[in-house]
Image 1 (cartoon, one colour):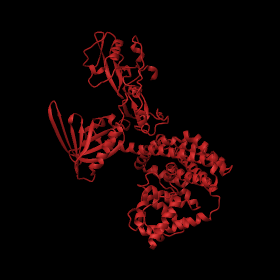
Image 2 (image 1 turned 180 degrees about the vertical axis):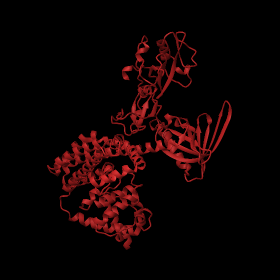
Image 3 (image 1 turned 90 degrees about the vertical axis):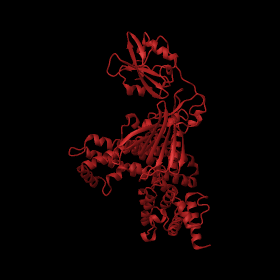
Length: 634
């Protein structure tokens, strides 16, 4: 066996022991094969984190490795690791490898040689440590919480000074930037107090009770979901303000010297988002150590770790959606002529792709065949819509040309290497041809994205067993009727059945869709008074809010604008809220401008459409009126 092969084999054995993964790197025999595996961000991050935590150094607590999106942050992970090696292992830059030696595979032999040496040192250090590892891990957890609490306190000091008499900052800006700082500080102050109290009674007591303490704090820790959702807004506002008013940046720099020198404001301000993921690594180490030193406490530690992983997974979603929401708003803001409701992520979903294509559209109708070609178009795909915006020249603003909801997409296929074709309703065809520009897109990628968007909007079983599920944005805190948990995310978290009102998140949809729909039609007396459902102060938006999550056919009556006489019928039709004017002519009532049927009373009009499908007079409305929403709901 060559020296290189032996080194690779020993390196793999060390990493297997480090990660407790006996199958790691099966089949790897060369430096290149091992480095190709390590270049995966998540695996590399785990190796680096475990390796550095083998050292009993204060530096460890200040080093952040990025488990989430780590493939994108691989370079940053490696740089963090290399910097720590200078102090943790006493190595110089010449004794280490370069970032591109691993990321770009410039010198895989050197990477393995360096890791082999570091892993051997780590193994020897681990063997020489005494049996007090559990105490060290518990102390690290308490120290980690203390450091985060101290950073949040410094952020509060910044806020106090920026609200001072001589400050250039206005109260509204400070309120946006520091919106959740108070709650985060109080949360971590209490958590640190509880963790310290547990640790003071011994490591085993800490492990035995950590799950109950953590479970008790979970409702408060969920403030992070709101924090992550708000953070892009706060950062964007802060950045814009500092660019517009440089004097505010000067004041910030002056306060940095007084409050957190040599660190910066951003260092302490971003502490929650940087340090929260590190808890998972600390609790993984706690679980491994408890398994060896205090096995009777393992159930409690494992439960705490499980709760933490669930929390971080949900936090991931909120953080990712917050950024996607911001990206969606920015991209659509560049398109002129787009309706306001089609700019709302809660209605159209989040940005999935944005690229340039040459677009051909063909449709046949009563007026003959229609053909259009646009040479340069931006195609913007969100969860529920495909937007096509064109410009006459490259310097012209984007102008909205076409919006295609996913329910109109009948199929997607590849025509050739550069073109994809989208089949729409009524035989229409939309062709997207690859455009030679810096924003080139691969048609194969777009086919996959379009099919995924279609599957998300209309998953298998959406219209089975009497159901009519629709992908919906629910209000914060809505519970899933499948698992009973809070729906995860902020945009299009799950599905709402328009027939029975069932609310279910994406994970529970398949099981819930197999159950029979139980339509919730609540009978109401035919001799009701129209005033029973008249909302005197409701406008169009308020009516939509009240009816959005009601069953198909739910309705209310509201004023028409500021008029005391005019009335509008607002109703839920398959999850969409429709508004139709109630006309009055010669003492009789009719519905809609083209209405030919009149009723002596408004009650008679409502009763008629309770037994007669509205499609009889309105071709696009397939429902009957079911339940009036009383004004007490307003």
